[in-house]
Image (cartoon, rainbow, N blue to C red):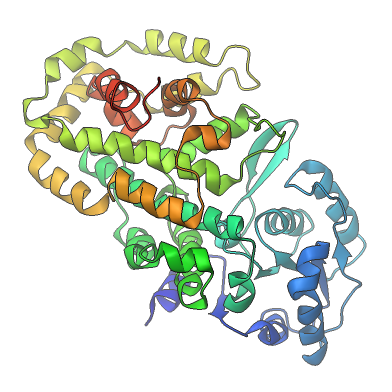
Length: 446
Protein backbone atom coordinates (compact mmCIF):
# COMPACT_ATOMS: atom_id res chain seq x y z
CA UNK A 1 0.00 0.00 0.00
CA UNK A 2 1.51 3.38 -1.03
CA UNK A 3 1.31 6.58 1.01
CA UNK A 4 -1.84 7.85 -0.70
CA UNK A 5 -3.67 4.53 -0.39
CA UNK A 6 -2.66 4.28 3.27
CA UNK A 7 -3.83 7.84 3.98
CA UNK A 8 -7.13 7.29 2.16
CA UNK A 9 -7.71 4.15 4.20
CA UNK A 10 -7.63 6.26 7.36
CA UNK A 11 -9.39 9.36 6.01
CA UNK A 12 -12.90 9.77 7.34
CA UNK A 13 -14.40 11.96 4.60
CA UNK A 14 -12.46 11.76 1.32
CA UNK A 15 -12.86 8.53 -0.63
CA UNK A 16 -10.89 9.18 -3.81
CA UNK A 17 -7.68 11.01 -4.76
CA UNK A 18 -6.02 10.97 -8.17
CA UNK A 19 -2.72 12.75 -8.80
CA UNK A 20 -0.84 12.68 -12.09
CA UNK A 21 0.07 14.50 -15.28
CA UNK A 22 -2.61 14.66 -17.95
CA UNK A 23 -5.38 13.11 -15.83
CA UNK A 24 -7.90 15.94 -16.19
CA UNK A 25 -10.01 13.80 -18.61
CA UNK A 26 -10.55 11.37 -15.70
CA UNK A 27 -12.65 13.89 -13.78
CA UNK A 28 -15.88 12.73 -15.40
CA UNK A 29 -15.28 9.10 -14.45
CA UNK A 30 -14.41 10.10 -10.87
CA UNK A 31 -17.64 12.09 -10.58
CA UNK A 32 -19.73 9.23 -11.94
CA UNK A 33 -18.13 6.76 -9.50
CA UNK A 34 -18.63 9.02 -6.48
CA UNK A 35 -22.04 10.45 -7.38
CA UNK A 36 -23.84 7.90 -9.58
CA UNK A 37 -26.92 9.30 -11.27
CA UNK A 38 -26.34 12.85 -10.02
CA UNK A 39 -26.16 16.11 -11.95
CA UNK A 40 -23.03 18.27 -11.71
CA UNK A 41 -22.44 22.01 -11.55
CA UNK A 42 -18.95 23.39 -12.08
CA UNK A 43 -17.89 26.24 -9.79
CA UNK A 44 -14.93 28.26 -11.04
CA UNK A 45 -13.61 31.73 -11.80
CA UNK A 46 -12.67 32.98 -15.28
CA UNK A 47 -9.04 31.85 -14.91
CA UNK A 48 -9.73 28.37 -13.54
CA UNK A 49 -12.50 27.89 -16.10
CA UNK A 50 -9.96 28.61 -18.82
CA UNK A 51 -7.12 26.44 -17.50
CA UNK A 52 -9.20 23.44 -16.42
CA UNK A 53 -12.94 24.08 -16.13
CA UNK A 54 -13.82 23.72 -19.80
CA UNK A 55 -11.96 20.41 -20.00
CA UNK A 56 -13.70 19.19 -16.84
CA UNK A 57 -17.05 20.10 -18.42
CA UNK A 58 -16.13 18.10 -21.52
CA UNK A 59 -15.01 15.14 -19.39
CA UNK A 60 -18.27 15.16 -17.44
CA UNK A 61 -20.23 15.23 -20.68
CA UNK A 62 -18.17 12.36 -22.10
CA UNK A 63 -18.95 10.33 -18.95
CA UNK A 64 -22.67 10.91 -19.49
CA UNK A 65 -23.06 13.26 -16.52
CA UNK A 66 -25.84 15.83 -16.88
CA UNK A 67 -24.79 19.36 -15.92
CA UNK A 68 -26.20 22.68 -14.85
CA UNK A 69 -24.71 25.82 -16.33
CA UNK A 70 -21.36 26.45 -14.58
CA UNK A 71 -21.32 29.17 -11.94
CA UNK A 72 -18.41 31.53 -12.54
CA UNK A 73 -17.36 33.99 -9.86
CA UNK A 74 -16.69 37.20 -11.79
CA UNK A 75 -15.57 39.53 -9.01
CA UNK A 76 -11.99 40.74 -9.59
CA UNK A 77 -11.52 40.67 -5.80
CA UNK A 78 -12.70 37.12 -5.14
CA UNK A 79 -11.80 36.00 -1.61
CA UNK A 80 -13.12 33.48 0.88
CA UNK A 81 -15.56 36.03 2.31
CA UNK A 82 -19.19 35.77 3.36
CA UNK A 83 -20.60 37.75 0.45
CA UNK A 84 -19.41 35.00 -1.88
CA UNK A 85 -20.84 32.31 0.40
CA UNK A 86 -24.22 34.00 -0.04
CA UNK A 87 -23.69 34.21 -3.80
CA UNK A 88 -22.98 30.49 -4.08
CA UNK A 89 -25.73 29.56 -1.61
CA UNK A 90 -28.23 31.24 -3.93
CA UNK A 91 -27.01 29.06 -6.80
CA UNK A 92 -27.10 25.77 -4.90
CA UNK A 93 -30.51 26.46 -3.39
CA UNK A 94 -32.00 26.35 -6.89
CA UNK A 95 -30.60 22.93 -7.80
CA UNK A 96 -29.74 19.52 -6.38
CA UNK A 97 -26.63 19.30 -8.58
CA UNK A 98 -23.34 18.22 -7.02
CA UNK A 99 -20.75 21.02 -7.05
CA UNK A 100 -17.44 20.40 -8.78
CA UNK A 101 -14.97 23.01 -7.50
CA UNK A 102 -12.35 23.93 -10.09
CA UNK A 103 -9.69 26.03 -8.41
CA UNK A 104 -7.55 26.19 -5.29
CA UNK A 105 -7.89 27.74 -1.83
CA UNK A 106 -10.65 30.32 -2.18
CA UNK A 107 -12.93 28.38 -4.50
CA UNK A 108 -12.41 25.15 -2.58
CA UNK A 109 -13.29 26.77 0.76
CA UNK A 110 -16.37 28.50 -0.66
CA UNK A 111 -17.65 25.31 -2.29
CA UNK A 112 -16.79 23.22 0.78
CA UNK A 113 -18.86 25.40 3.08
CA UNK A 114 -21.76 26.01 0.70
CA UNK A 115 -22.05 22.32 -0.19
CA UNK A 116 -22.39 21.51 3.50
CA UNK A 117 -24.87 24.34 4.08
CA UNK A 118 -26.99 22.97 1.23
CA UNK A 119 -26.91 19.33 2.33
CA UNK A 120 -24.59 17.67 -0.12
CA UNK A 121 -20.99 16.61 -0.72
CA UNK A 122 -18.73 17.82 -3.52
CA UNK A 123 -15.53 17.06 -5.42
CA UNK A 124 -12.65 19.33 -6.32
CA UNK A 125 -10.30 19.60 -9.27
CA UNK A 126 -7.22 21.40 -7.97
CA UNK A 127 -5.46 23.97 -10.12
CA UNK A 128 -2.53 25.02 -7.89
CA UNK A 129 -0.33 23.59 -5.14
CA UNK A 130 -0.99 26.64 -2.99
CA UNK A 131 -2.15 25.23 0.38
CA UNK A 132 -3.08 22.07 2.29
CA UNK A 133 -6.78 22.86 2.58
CA UNK A 134 -7.99 20.75 -0.34
CA UNK A 135 -8.52 17.66 1.80
CA UNK A 136 -8.95 19.25 5.22
CA UNK A 137 -12.27 19.48 7.01
CA UNK A 138 -13.45 23.00 7.72
CA UNK A 139 -13.41 26.14 5.60
CA UNK A 140 -11.61 29.36 6.46
CA UNK A 141 -13.99 32.23 5.65
CA UNK A 142 -14.00 35.91 6.60
CA UNK A 143 -17.28 36.59 8.45
CA UNK A 144 -18.22 39.85 10.16
CA UNK A 145 -14.73 41.17 9.60
CA UNK A 146 -12.81 38.24 11.09
CA UNK A 147 -11.33 35.11 9.53
CA UNK A 148 -13.16 32.11 10.99
CA UNK A 149 -13.02 28.37 10.45
CA UNK A 150 -16.45 26.86 9.79
CA UNK A 151 -16.96 23.16 10.38
CA UNK A 152 -17.78 21.27 7.19
CA UNK A 153 -16.63 18.01 5.56
CA UNK A 154 -13.71 17.64 3.19
CA UNK A 155 -14.47 16.81 -0.47
CA UNK A 156 -15.56 13.30 -1.32
CA UNK A 157 -13.06 13.22 -4.19
CA UNK A 158 -10.02 15.19 -5.33
CA UNK A 159 -8.32 15.21 -8.71
CA UNK A 160 -4.98 16.97 -9.19
CA UNK A 161 -3.51 17.14 -12.69
CA UNK A 162 0.15 17.97 -12.08
CA UNK A 163 0.57 19.32 -15.61
CA UNK A 164 -2.05 21.98 -14.81
CA UNK A 165 -0.71 22.61 -11.30
CA UNK A 166 2.89 22.94 -12.51
CA UNK A 167 1.80 25.82 -14.77
CA UNK A 168 0.13 27.77 -11.93
CA UNK A 169 1.57 31.18 -10.96
CA UNK A 170 4.90 30.75 -9.17
CA UNK A 171 3.77 32.68 -6.11
CA UNK A 172 0.93 30.18 -5.58
CA UNK A 173 3.37 27.26 -5.74
CA UNK A 174 5.74 29.08 -3.39
CA UNK A 175 2.85 29.56 -0.97
CA UNK A 176 2.07 25.84 -1.04
CA UNK A 177 5.72 24.93 -0.55
CA UNK A 178 5.83 27.12 2.57
CA UNK A 179 2.58 25.59 3.87
CA UNK A 180 4.11 22.13 3.43
CA UNK A 181 7.41 23.21 5.01
CA UNK A 182 5.46 24.32 8.09
CA UNK A 183 4.77 20.64 8.82
CA UNK A 184 8.40 20.38 9.95
CA UNK A 185 8.18 22.65 13.04
CA UNK A 186 4.53 21.62 13.50
CA UNK A 187 5.76 18.05 13.84
CA UNK A 188 8.32 19.19 16.40
CA UNK A 189 5.54 20.91 18.35
CA UNK A 190 3.66 17.63 18.54
CA UNK A 191 6.82 15.76 19.56
CA UNK A 192 7.51 18.09 22.49
CA UNK A 193 3.83 18.16 23.46
CA UNK A 194 3.85 14.37 23.63
CA UNK A 195 7.16 14.24 25.50
CA UNK A 196 5.84 16.57 28.20
CA UNK A 197 2.56 14.72 28.60
CA UNK A 198 0.40 17.53 27.19
CA UNK A 199 -1.05 15.85 24.09
CA UNK A 200 -0.18 12.30 23.01
CA UNK A 201 1.29 11.86 19.57
CA UNK A 202 -0.87 9.86 17.18
CA UNK A 203 1.76 7.80 15.36
CA UNK A 204 -0.53 7.01 12.44
CA UNK A 205 -1.55 10.62 11.76
CA UNK A 206 2.01 11.82 12.39
CA UNK A 207 3.39 9.34 9.86
CA UNK A 208 0.85 10.33 7.19
CA UNK A 209 2.29 13.85 7.26
CA UNK A 210 5.92 13.26 8.09
CA UNK A 211 6.84 10.17 6.04
CA UNK A 212 8.24 11.50 2.79
CA UNK A 213 8.03 15.14 3.90
CA UNK A 214 11.77 15.76 3.75
CA UNK A 215 11.90 14.34 0.21
CA UNK A 216 8.99 16.53 -0.93
CA UNK A 217 10.86 19.61 0.32
CA UNK A 218 14.24 18.54 -0.99
CA UNK A 219 14.26 20.19 -4.45
CA UNK A 220 13.23 23.84 -4.08
CA UNK A 221 14.83 24.72 -7.41
CA UNK A 222 12.63 22.17 -9.18
CA UNK A 223 9.60 23.60 -7.40
CA UNK A 224 10.58 27.11 -8.50
CA UNK A 225 10.89 25.94 -12.10
CA UNK A 226 7.56 24.14 -11.87
CA UNK A 227 8.76 20.73 -13.03
CA UNK A 228 6.10 18.04 -12.94
CA UNK A 229 8.56 15.72 -11.15
CA UNK A 230 8.74 18.05 -8.13
CA UNK A 231 5.16 19.33 -8.21
CA UNK A 232 3.82 15.78 -7.83
CA UNK A 233 5.40 15.16 -4.38
CA UNK A 234 4.51 18.71 -3.32
CA UNK A 235 0.81 18.40 -4.06
CA UNK A 236 0.76 14.88 -2.63
CA UNK A 237 2.29 16.14 0.62
CA UNK A 238 -0.30 18.90 0.85
CA UNK A 239 -3.14 16.43 0.25
CA UNK A 240 -1.77 14.03 2.87
CA UNK A 241 -1.76 16.82 5.44
CA UNK A 242 -5.51 17.11 5.00
CA UNK A 243 -5.97 13.34 5.28
CA UNK A 244 -4.00 13.31 8.54
CA UNK A 245 -6.31 16.00 9.91
CA UNK A 246 -9.29 13.88 8.89
CA UNK A 247 -7.80 10.81 10.57
CA UNK A 248 -7.00 12.68 13.81
CA UNK A 249 -10.11 14.88 13.68
CA UNK A 250 -8.06 17.99 14.51
CA UNK A 251 -5.52 20.15 12.69
CA UNK A 252 -2.73 19.11 15.10
CA UNK A 253 -0.91 16.86 12.55
CA UNK A 254 -0.36 19.81 10.20
CA UNK A 255 -0.44 22.96 12.31
CA UNK A 256 1.58 24.37 15.20
CA UNK A 257 3.08 27.68 16.23
CA UNK A 258 3.68 28.46 12.54
CA UNK A 259 -0.08 28.75 11.93
CA UNK A 260 -0.73 30.65 15.16
CA UNK A 261 1.08 33.66 13.69
CA UNK A 262 -1.09 33.49 10.57
CA UNK A 263 -4.27 33.20 12.67
CA UNK A 264 -3.22 36.21 14.72
CA UNK A 265 -2.48 38.43 11.74
CA UNK A 266 -5.73 37.47 10.04
CA UNK A 267 -7.66 38.34 13.18
CA UNK A 268 -5.79 41.64 13.37
CA UNK A 269 -6.90 42.32 9.75
CA UNK A 270 -3.30 42.69 8.65
CA UNK A 271 -2.77 44.10 5.17
CA UNK A 272 0.34 45.12 3.29
CA UNK A 273 1.04 48.68 2.14
CA UNK A 274 -0.74 48.00 -1.17
CA UNK A 275 -3.92 46.98 0.67
CA UNK A 276 -3.61 43.28 -0.05
CA UNK A 277 -3.57 40.52 2.56
CA UNK A 278 -0.51 38.25 2.31
CA UNK A 279 -1.40 34.73 1.24
CA UNK A 280 -1.85 32.10 3.91
CA UNK A 281 1.29 30.30 2.76
CA UNK A 282 3.37 33.48 2.86
CA UNK A 283 2.18 34.27 6.37
CA UNK A 284 3.00 30.70 7.40
CA UNK A 285 6.44 31.05 5.79
CA UNK A 286 7.32 33.71 8.35
CA UNK A 287 5.55 31.77 11.09
CA UNK A 288 7.50 28.58 10.43
CA UNK A 289 10.78 30.48 10.43
CA UNK A 290 9.86 32.08 13.75
CA UNK A 291 9.09 28.65 15.21
CA UNK A 292 12.35 27.31 13.78
CA UNK A 293 14.32 30.19 15.30
CA UNK A 294 12.86 29.42 18.72
CA UNK A 295 13.60 25.72 18.30
CA UNK A 296 17.22 26.55 17.55
CA UNK A 297 17.39 28.59 20.76
CA UNK A 298 15.78 25.68 22.62
CA UNK A 299 18.24 23.16 21.23
CA UNK A 300 21.22 25.41 22.04
CA UNK A 301 20.08 25.95 25.63
CA UNK A 302 21.58 24.01 28.54
CA UNK A 303 18.33 22.34 29.55
CA UNK A 304 20.27 19.90 31.72
CA UNK A 305 20.86 22.89 34.01
CA UNK A 306 17.37 24.34 33.73
CA UNK A 307 16.38 26.36 36.78
CA UNK A 308 13.09 24.65 37.51
CA UNK A 309 12.38 26.49 40.76
CA UNK A 310 13.13 29.83 39.11
CA UNK A 311 10.65 29.03 36.34
CA UNK A 312 8.02 27.94 38.84
CA UNK A 313 8.52 31.13 40.88
CA UNK A 314 8.02 33.22 37.73
CA UNK A 315 4.86 31.32 36.77
CA UNK A 316 1.73 33.44 37.38
CA UNK A 317 -1.32 32.34 39.30
CA UNK A 318 -4.39 31.73 37.12
CA UNK A 319 -6.08 35.03 38.02
CA UNK A 320 -2.93 36.96 37.12
CA UNK A 321 -2.54 35.06 33.83
CA UNK A 322 -6.16 35.71 32.91
CA UNK A 323 -5.87 39.41 33.71
CA UNK A 324 -2.81 39.67 31.47
CA UNK A 325 -4.54 37.76 28.66
CA UNK A 326 -7.52 40.14 28.78
CA UNK A 327 -5.22 43.17 28.61
CA UNK A 328 -3.29 41.66 25.71
CA UNK A 329 -6.23 41.88 23.30
CA UNK A 330 -8.05 44.90 24.70
CA UNK A 331 -9.47 47.02 21.90
CA UNK A 332 -9.50 44.19 19.34
CA UNK A 333 -12.38 42.35 17.68
CA UNK A 334 -11.55 39.36 19.89
CA UNK A 335 -11.08 40.77 23.41
CA UNK A 336 -11.74 37.53 25.31
CA UNK A 337 -9.96 34.96 23.14
CA UNK A 338 -6.77 35.25 25.18
CA UNK A 339 -8.73 34.68 28.38
CA UNK A 340 -10.45 31.60 26.97
CA UNK A 341 -7.32 30.03 25.48
CA UNK A 342 -5.10 30.87 28.46
CA UNK A 343 -7.61 29.30 30.83
CA UNK A 344 -7.80 26.19 28.65
CA UNK A 345 -4.08 25.45 28.78
CA UNK A 346 -3.17 26.82 32.17
CA UNK A 347 -1.47 24.48 34.67
CA UNK A 348 -0.65 25.01 38.32
CA UNK A 349 2.80 25.48 39.78
CA UNK A 350 3.19 21.87 40.94
CA UNK A 351 2.16 20.52 37.55
CA UNK A 352 4.62 22.93 35.90
CA UNK A 353 7.36 21.71 38.24
CA UNK A 354 6.65 18.11 37.25
CA UNK A 355 6.51 18.99 33.56
CA UNK A 356 9.85 20.80 33.62
CA UNK A 357 11.40 17.92 35.57
CA UNK A 358 10.26 15.58 32.79
CA UNK A 359 11.89 17.87 30.24
CA UNK A 360 15.13 18.13 32.20
CA UNK A 361 15.41 14.43 33.04
CA UNK A 362 14.69 13.28 29.49
CA UNK A 363 16.49 16.06 27.64
CA UNK A 364 19.06 13.92 25.74
CA UNK A 365 16.32 11.79 24.14
CA UNK A 366 14.01 14.75 23.51
CA UNK A 367 16.82 16.82 22.03
CA UNK A 368 17.91 14.01 19.72
CA UNK A 369 14.43 13.62 18.30
CA UNK A 370 13.93 17.35 17.82
CA UNK A 371 17.32 17.72 16.11
CA UNK A 372 16.29 14.98 13.68
CA UNK A 373 12.99 16.75 13.00
CA UNK A 374 14.01 20.41 12.64
CA UNK A 375 15.61 21.80 9.47
CA UNK A 376 18.03 24.57 10.54
CA UNK A 377 16.89 28.18 10.16
CA UNK A 378 19.57 29.04 7.59
CA UNK A 379 18.72 26.05 5.40
CA UNK A 380 14.97 26.61 5.73
CA UNK A 381 15.45 30.26 4.73
CA UNK A 382 17.60 29.27 1.76
CA UNK A 383 15.00 26.87 0.39
CA UNK A 384 12.12 29.29 0.94
CA UNK A 385 14.03 32.07 -0.85
CA UNK A 386 14.67 29.78 -3.82
CA UNK A 387 10.97 29.04 -4.33
CA UNK A 388 10.07 32.72 -3.87
CA UNK A 389 8.51 32.60 -0.40
CA UNK A 390 9.22 35.42 2.09
CA UNK A 391 11.92 34.91 4.72
CA UNK A 392 11.83 38.30 6.48
CA UNK A 393 8.75 39.70 8.27
CA UNK A 394 8.89 42.99 6.39
CA UNK A 395 8.32 41.09 3.13
CA UNK A 396 4.71 40.53 4.25
CA UNK A 397 4.35 43.99 5.77
CA UNK A 398 5.20 43.03 9.36
CA UNK A 399 7.87 45.19 11.01
CA UNK A 400 10.39 43.36 13.13
CA UNK A 401 9.15 45.14 16.23
CA UNK A 402 5.63 43.95 15.48
CA UNK A 403 7.00 40.47 14.79
CA UNK A 404 8.61 40.47 18.22
CA UNK A 405 5.31 41.55 19.79
CA UNK A 406 3.46 38.90 17.79
CA UNK A 407 5.37 36.13 19.53
CA UNK A 408 3.59 36.48 22.86
CA UNK A 409 0.27 37.40 21.21
CA UNK A 410 0.45 34.28 19.06
CA UNK A 411 1.22 32.17 22.14
CA UNK A 412 -2.07 33.30 23.68
CA UNK A 413 -4.21 32.99 20.54
CA UNK A 414 -4.63 29.19 20.66
CA UNK A 415 -4.59 26.54 23.37
CA UNK A 416 -2.40 24.23 21.28
CA UNK A 417 0.93 23.51 23.00
CA UNK A 418 3.90 24.64 20.90
CA UNK A 419 7.49 25.84 21.17
CA UNK A 420 6.11 29.20 22.30
CA UNK A 421 4.63 27.52 25.37
CA UNK A 422 7.95 25.82 26.03
CA UNK A 423 9.63 29.24 25.96
CA UNK A 424 7.14 30.66 28.45
CA UNK A 425 7.09 27.70 30.83
CA UNK A 426 10.88 27.37 31.03
CA UNK A 427 11.08 31.14 31.71
CA UNK A 428 13.45 31.41 28.75
CA UNK A 429 11.19 33.41 26.41
CA UNK A 430 12.96 36.70 27.08
CA UNK A 431 16.42 35.23 26.61
CA UNK A 432 15.50 33.49 23.37
CA UNK A 433 13.64 36.51 22.01
CA UNK A 434 16.61 38.78 22.71
CA UNK A 435 18.87 36.36 20.83
CA UNK A 436 16.56 36.31 17.79
CA UNK A 437 15.77 40.03 17.59
CA UNK A 438 18.84 41.46 19.30
CA UNK A 439 22.34 42.22 17.94
CA UNK A 440 23.48 39.48 15.60
CA UNK A 441 20.08 37.76 15.69
CA UNK A 442 18.46 36.27 12.61
CA UNK A 443 15.89 39.10 12.61
CA UNK A 444 17.93 41.79 14.33
CA UNK A 445 16.02 44.98 15.06
CA UNK A 446 18.34 47.80 14.05
